[in-house]
Image (cartoon, rainbow, N blue to C red):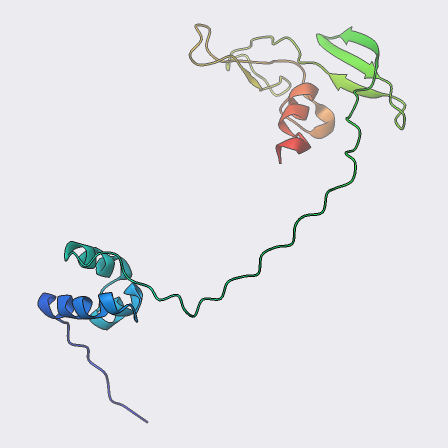
Length: 173
């Protein structure tokens, strides 16, 4: 076995500056490699080189191979037709919630909910069965209030059905 330990003696500032002055303009070693020689980080070597006025490092790019240009793109086919919203069939209002029933081809009926009018409950008025979706703004005179409509029990949510759908939308990612 080789029990010989290598002890690195730190360079003085003038010695390390001399190594940078010699190696920087040649361009054979990267700043990280120069730093490894003298015990400094890559950024420290670059900083010293610029403070010594050595300027930008010259890089030889003779060994760099260029990638072949890409083939021109083929034009795509015709654009699909724009989505047309289905016609509205009926609007039902109950419990402060407005439901719009819409006819579609594949689905017999779909229910779209419009935003319910907030009951403007304060945080002290909230209970386990009230929607906790915040309404308003801290900047407003009235401050923040909460929706207060009955929670959407089917989803075990803290929001009413409308606010549950808003916060759990698949479009949000």
